[in-house]
Image (tube, helix red, strand yellow):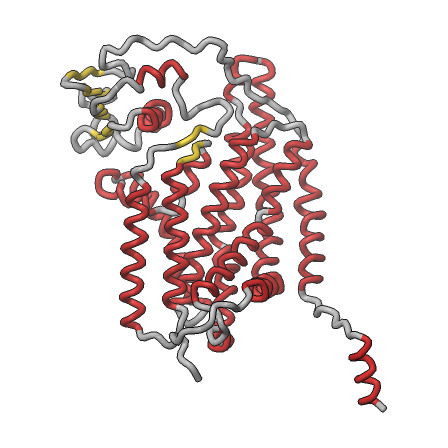
Length: 455
């Protein structure tokens, strides 16, 4: 038997391999079980979101000034997709692992790698199957958007597509990690534990970094959940997209490295090290990309046009020193309303905490607590404004209308029959049809030959 490392022809068609992966993925139980569980999970999230949104809208209808604070992105879309996020985090790894884990346990992988396909091609086909599985799993969440619009709700295309893109990248990242875990381990159960270690470990990192930003703040960038946070805010960051794509391709490359059974462990380790270094270099380079776009309708992530033009005149370094504890709610507001916007507009900006202030209680006696110091060009000012360089005050843009808000009082129970009845029934029918053996069609010549054998 030839070695898996031997040169193989590359003229084998990709279509049959991809069809095989899609067929095996669709005929397995994990995908359809996850989809059945997603129906009530997403349905309950949508029901709760519409109910709370309706209660707030009832107050806004009596007080029109409150309507501008109502955004379907925050009130309906993000909570609804939150249920989908939980399922992708906890259940989707089992779907992705099956694409490779079953072949490894049954021994079919030993035969598969003898076919005229290189390991990257095999992993590429499996990654496409994972993408198809994510599309199928997203049906409940996407149907919730259709129901929301049917109820009379408002959907802004840019922010909706941006949110879906964020969940897609997160799902592909989880799937790529699952493929790497399945290629690295010998059993599907072990691969599931490794994958959940990545996903659940992100929650631990987020919790720890929230209370210790100086010590663990840098590690929060490694958290998988941070992938979604920026998209949930309605911000499309090219740096984040490139970084996530690099991580997806990096884990897929690692899976291709550990897939062949003929290579020694030493060779695999060397190749893995090279792959990790290359991936890290790309991700570090991605952090230098400054381009981002505000996809929200209310432009929450941007200053006004006049403010942006004024801030664009700042050519020197701007240092912002924050005298607040990281867990202080005022810092979260400052970060959202001012600091993150400054980072998008000013390329040379440094934001840091003052001293070792780590708790609200311990810093309450400090007279400077709560202040924000801006230093620019040798001058400094303690203020919460951005004018520290004698830049003329920005003039509000003429003709720019305010965000109207979209209050809506709807009956959320309308969606329940679909999520607990109609959609699960369709999923069960699709599952049943996918498990049926395909009918074999004989040609006329084959029928004649079969008759001769019978006679």
